[in-house]
Image (tube, rainbow, N blue to C red; front, side):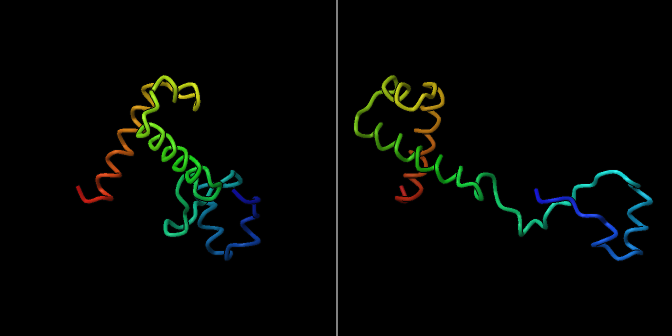
Length: 98
């Protein structure tokens, strides 16, 4: 979120008066227009890092690494790893057209 802006500095006076009828002197968050909003983790790169990690987990699993070993390496529970592996398998099927 950016810095706060004073409504009187950015809004036309008539619009400011209309908004003041609903919320007068309180803080108001105005979200970005939907087409401008980035998805979770896109701006920070977190989503890409998690996707890369999940690809790596799946590749290691396919090479024969056990869930118990992956738990120690990635500090994730067996249930979390199984979910990641299942999702990666589904993605691989979709990509390969099977």
